[in-house]
Image (cartoon, rainbow, N blue to C red; front, top):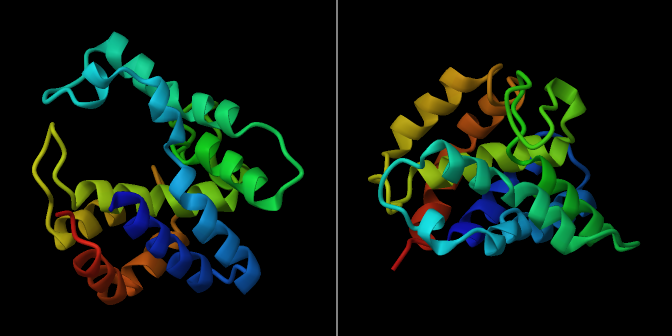
Length: 175
């Protein structure tokens, strides 16, 4: 349900940020492919209940490049966008992300949008290594990371969408 929720969040945030409707719809379709590269990561790492050690973390960070390689280079606008999302959704506004260390507006808008939506949903969902955070806790985290991890222009737009985001989360709740 994660990819369904975060793709809906992505559509809303893209629209709120002024992305033309056709491009916002395309991003909605591309967003679920953001973590396709995780099929190249061993289950022992993906499902580990505790903190990853440095070698495991290095392996986990490879999923962005693996995803871009899986999607490949195509003429299709959807697949071009999906490749960009897979490759850039872990880049950080301050340059501290991966796989390249892009910063600010050098990170494609689609990567910046998906980063916020992906992190919010991951934080508010149970994972093998953590409890689900409340919507308020996750929203506070996003605010604290604006201008560090996230585009400071997009975070307030996401915050304004929280009533709709919460409805989507409840409608597509994990079983």
